[in-house]
Length: 116
Image (cartoon, rainbow, N blue to C red; front, side, top):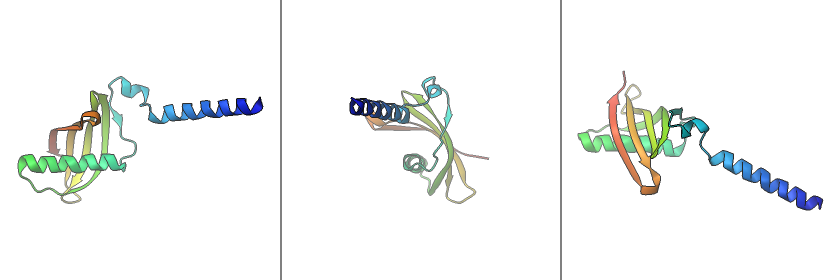
């Protein structure tokens, strides 16, 4: 009997841990902006690189992506991001606003502007 209780407790603890790790914070569900906690996350860095490439394609520019240095996100019909990106040189900072719907494989760059 103790083994069944221990197993049930372990299953419950695992289920709670999984739900906490994948569920967005309650404020994200309200549509509010939240800071990107792990700015070094490979997906966030990849989004920054994509934003620079998309800007270059649209404007026939030649900026070189360095890294995303800060940002925030908002849960909407997908995820909307406001990113601060270093590009071309250490002093070249740009603000990029974009949205991503992973389930449709869609990304849209709304704006890309110099900061400062």
